[in-house]
Image (cartoon, rainbow, N blue to C red; front, side, top):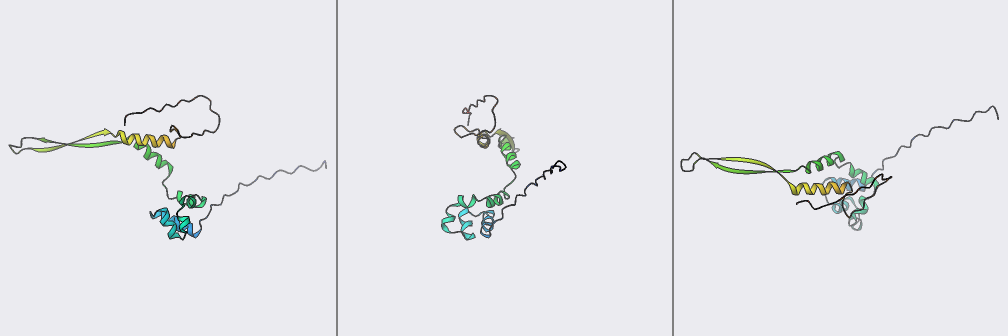
Length: 160
């Protein structure tokens, strides 16, 4: 056995993950949802029983259908962009002002546009952003890995 060289280990090829395919009923359900139907209506039209149609969370939790529905949504980057825009929301108010004399007939209306901070909209987007980042008080926050320093987050009521 002294003359035999050890065999080199073969490199394993990464497994191709096969995309789960939709059943015909799931495809019809997805189509109905894409058309704007309610989950119940789309399920009934796709041939699901009334019992199944009344439990949409069970239908929508199947991996193949979740993946197919995710393809209908906008990319997460666009969603984040819109949320960030909402954090800077403004509202434009228009005021009219009469210039001149009504008596002499040389009056005209001047319009003035003023941008004001939309505090209510900004607050809603801030809450949404905090919730998506897991920063809402009273909600469970899970962190994986080690935490190197203590973090204190204080939520205070800021004008509405």
